[in-house]
Length: 409
Image (cartoon, rainbow, N blue to C red; front, side, top):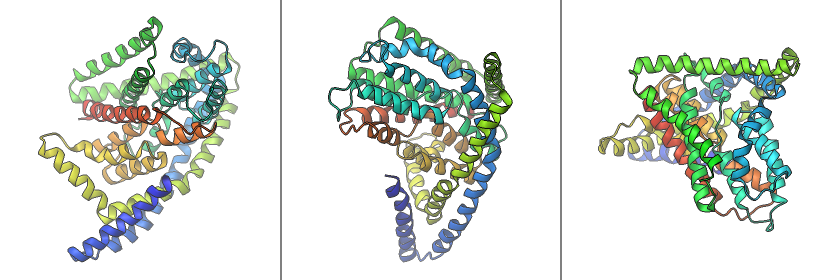
């Protein structure tokens, strides 16, 4: 899929440049596209290099949280809910433990821990599957929850915004939290309806009702504030909560007598490797997107959508986030490249820059998760998994747009 997307960017750019030359006599597009090749490759390297320090910081902090037992704490907190959402898993089966730990690791943004735990959970669920090439209801729900998982600490988004020069890289913390919550709720409800899950269970209602009440109350409160006051209070709350998480991680680690300095350095080393490892992928996507924009193809598409939106009397600023929203279910690196290119072109603190950051953090890459998780156990008949996952993606994108208008509009 990604091979086709990446290659199509160049072919579309070439076709548009040819049309502009033949119809309008514009032959400067070729020079602009070649210039974009060099400019964006340099930008990609500079972004990745600048990410190193901040990536080391956050992965170091996350390693302290992991060793300190934050994952175990979340697993205990959400265990009763997950046991009711997966009725096909017998009590005491290893699958439930892996599911709970995977969800907890996803909430903390611990990708390195979440993926192995997710693969283990899928393998254990497969052991309960009577038709080995056909996804069970529990496997589908597990996949949908993974594609729309609530992320409490979207550290990677903070890192990218810091590198792109955001005055307050964490000002999108609450918008991302709200957007990813709604994508998760919609994904869960749609899948529950299809699978006829008993979501009216008192425990399930208590969890979902409680979380929904908190999020809605937060939105109602912030919507009642003046824009300047809203942005100031949002920044204060976001930064306080993030620092509170760090203090909590350190406290938990101290209780377990975890050597926090050595543990931080261990995680920071992983951060260095991650930052260096993404250079080829980042350069590849930024170059392709840069060529597409230099050709005028991306602007033609956005201008056409913007014209239609404005003709209907609606605000069209959200259109700048549309490419990232469309790419997000297909390719994580592609969506990341579009996010960074938008922030490079319009600024990290612009409405578009904040919007693409929120969209990027609202969901996971549906087709990638489906390919990795189902592919690892040989499932070919995915049933309603794609439809439910994409529904959650749409809900996340729509929620991201609305919440950005609330916080930054």
